[in-house]
Image (tube, rainbow, N blue to C red; front, top):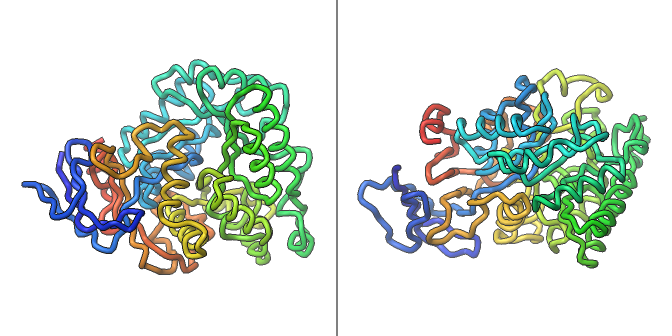
Length: 437
């Protein structure tokens, strides 16, 4: 394996240093480093962070290859500085058996751009009626530790209780899509002045908050770990804060788009802004930013949701929910949290790498940069600023809400297992990356 010396990188605490990646680890950290035969990379002015970790990625394969594949989705991940992603279970067939999760993991290993950790379904076929084959997925080669029916809510409280109890036995975590289905029938946009103005059926905040309130109590009752997906309302932040104050084993994530965008962007009926949960109001954005800053919300997760063009370039009511987010996430967090003074770069490292790796039990990722650590790294230029364009999208889909928007920063290099997947801002050739996988 080729050794690499990253010269003059700046760590999250502001320290400038050289990093030697060799032998599958960070071999040395210091100044004036060199190694015979090593490739030197000028990292002066670049920020070095542990590779980003995403707890919430839709890779679509198997069954949805028209929108994304494991290969194209992990290319998008690498372009955004991610070295590990958690693949959601709402594929076709659903990832509710050992064979499907092992297939997804194998596809990730073959691609070589990032570690792919499959998420197993909670219920068979995501139907919410009976538990999936949780035990076999947990014991499989994929070693599944996170389970979710994301895309739909586990709405039946008895099924939810049984799932929490069963998953607890494997040391796993249940990631809930908090949406009371009876309160969101026909819902199209956050319930408020904008939905009323546009004549779109409102999506009330209480539909999210009611499920979170129920589930944190179930988690307390069962002693199980609960993770709340894509939290989006001020009330949800308060519920998580209350639960943590009582010692309940709950964690939560927020998406980059809920940190930056509001429901007012739907005024032109541009379906790029149609997402589940919907974009919320200014006060919700302020609350989730504050919750992420103070640790109430543990992690940023992209909810990367690729779709074919015809699923988004149509009238609002017919459009699919979701937006791609892997390639833009670090820049969006930079703008929403760092430029506003709510997080420093050590805080970004915590919410985009260390905490997600811990919650998802994704080993070898999220480690502090130091001698002996896994060489999973991203080099980021925080001084760059440009309009986010199609050239930044490395996946198969183009449904980004940020196209044409000025965003700070740019990923310059990503290293996975000690070798580059991105250099000089360009994703490397798939054959070259796969040959090292």
